[in-house]
Amino acid sequence: MWTAFDYMYRDAGNFKAFGRVIIKGSLNEADRYSILSCLSSGEFFIAEQVGVPPLYEQLYRWSGGPTQSDHCWHEFVAFRDLSELPVGASTAVAAAEFVARFAAVTDWDGELSPHFRLADPLRA
Image 1 (cartoon, rainbow, N blue to C red):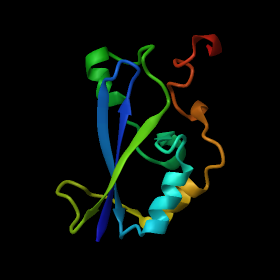
Image 2: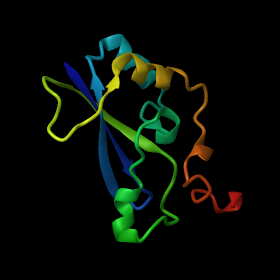
Image 3: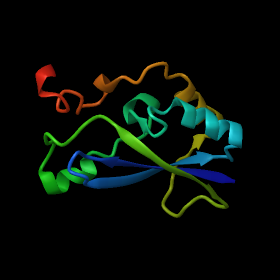
């Protein structure tokens, strides 16, 4: 059994990039609740802080690089149960490790993102 953690990055201009992390094993309801309870406002997280690949660069092909619309937050979309490893997926993170990454967060640290300073010009 595999689980997909689907997520996205949406810049301030509402341009979106989508990603997923494949989790080896099934996440039970307690695991899912544990992850969701760690998210800011129930949906936002700093990808770099939990070892999830950031998606900013998917938008760079249109913008030519970071813009003032970029920020540090990614959004949780859904969990999906999978019966097999998706084609093209070469790696997966163990379920217990993935849950532990989120559980270890006591405070989201936007400074881990290269877009932290872009989100507020007064911080630059």
